[in-house]
Amino acid sequence: MQNKRGISQAFAPVAVPQLQIRPATVFDVFDMSRVLISSIRDLCKADHDGDAARIAEWTADKSPERIRTWIEGPGRYWLAELGGAVAGVGGLNSKGAISLLYVAPEVAGQGAGTALLAHLESELLKSGCSEGRLNATGTALEFYQANGWQRDGAPVNFCGTPCLPMHKHLD
Image 1 (cartoon, rainbow, N blue to C red):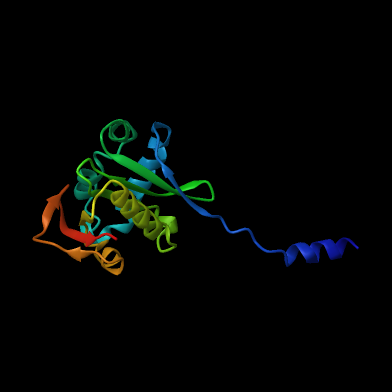
Image 2: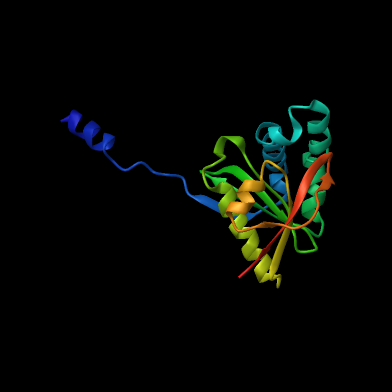
């Protein structure tokens, strides 16, 4: 009879962690820092070519102490959580533009970035913006284009990395 229980457990549905998006708080700064730095280091290789100086410049303002000032400032930030772990970080600046969107390398390609982007777009709409704006890295360009964003102007420099201005009509 013990075997029956083992078999039923083997065929029981597996619980799949749900992705949840919630506002970031000052208690999240260490997780946010970890996701931002690991994402830049591991996923944005096409932008920094593994150059330690470029990575250091890009991640210099991603410390927990610095992120705390962001949260206490005029911007707004959200976390995507998967199974209780921080899977992504997104933010809007005070001018109504997406200021950042990064996912943890271990969940890249699993929908956290897309869900977080949809949430940020929804927040822009709620705040009265009919058009979204952002600056995309070369690594993220295809992701944004696949989600309806269009290039909008000449490249700009951000932390030593060329970024492409983009926009999207929100509806």
